[in-house]
Length: 271
Image (cartoon, rainbow, N blue to C red; front, side):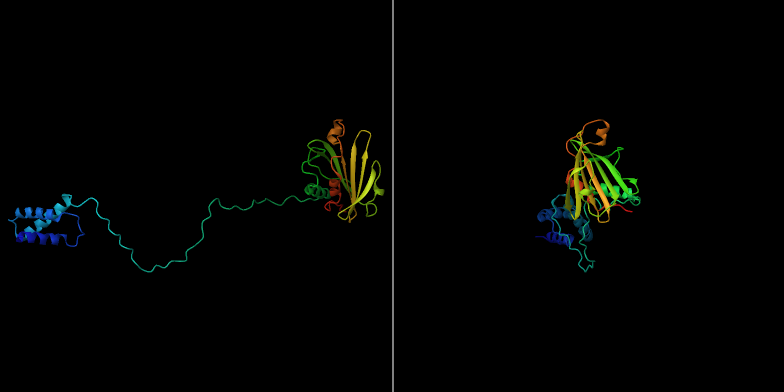
């Protein structure tokens, strides 16, 4: 190998010193560098070094000796050190719409100011009449208690079932006699009187029937405070009576429902 060969190899070593390994044909680079060196023998030694370095770098970049698939370089690790963080929260954000508060009301609900109002709310709120039946006041509105005299409040309503109609009257009165109900308090047209004990109450039951086929069933009880509560169910509604129609079957409410009404502690005479 000539001194020129040694010079070229030394120049290549200097030019490529510190560079990453290149996938190239060193012999081809050596031949190209040697050929260009002959063309530059006129240059001074310093000029020759510069020319060879430029020729070698140009050959590497332009001749395609470096493949397109350059090897991946390892990503340097992140700088090490101590990082102080606060405690990690384990709470999660709820999915879905935000929770809502209960609906609010404007003002207070209406307050019953009379005995009739108190009795009406107590009766309608007790749901003693079977739910499949509808109560219709004689004026077409919701039924209500009315003061008939200072010692008596009465509610009168039609009761409509899916297959028939009847009437209901509920009376709350101040007791005028002894604290225990008995058949002695039952007057005509009622008959067939009987006494039952229901949840500590003494209840009188009686019935009537007239020549037109109208039937009625009555329950009566005297509360411990002396209030007398009476409930009467018929088989003829006021609406049908006004139209001249005939009664229908049995009284619209059964005895158990009438008893539940007259022993309701919310129905009592205040006075």
